[in-house]
Length: 162
Figure 1 (cartoon, rainbow, N blue to C red):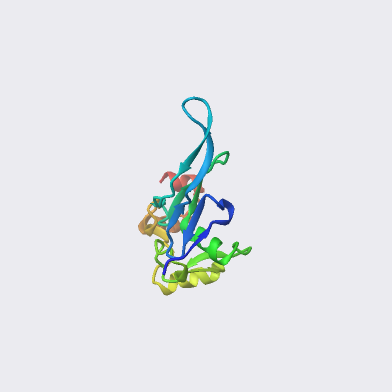
Figure 2: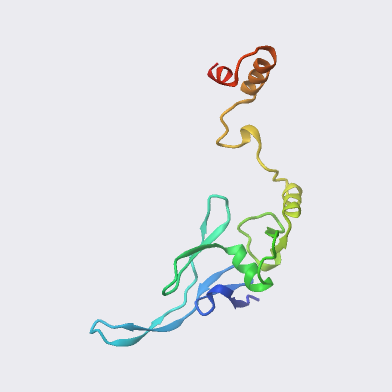
């Protein structure tokens, strides 16, 4: 059963559920109508559209009157609302390693070390070397550079030029 709770910093504006959904709360505000008179205006609550950030985590956009727009990770909102503020030196961790699974039962606070251990256990080690899309050198290039630096008295600049 899905349960809802207000997001602490956005109380009265947004709520988050145990299943990882975020919604705005129906509210009434005072605003000027087309005739220039102050009138009550109802904002109907709705589910927020989630977007996937470049790092694979779901984000939502939060805003309110006289507040700057803020983009937040859904998993961080769920943990903050249901488990309290994140302790110092802790991270939000997904138990099953799926970055878009933001159910409360799948989230926990953990250390960087425990999060890295989870990553290894899920078979998703950090990318290294040529696995990184922005890598500039191939393994063959690295071997040639090491060989040149050991066998010749060339400067780093001259080795780079070769």
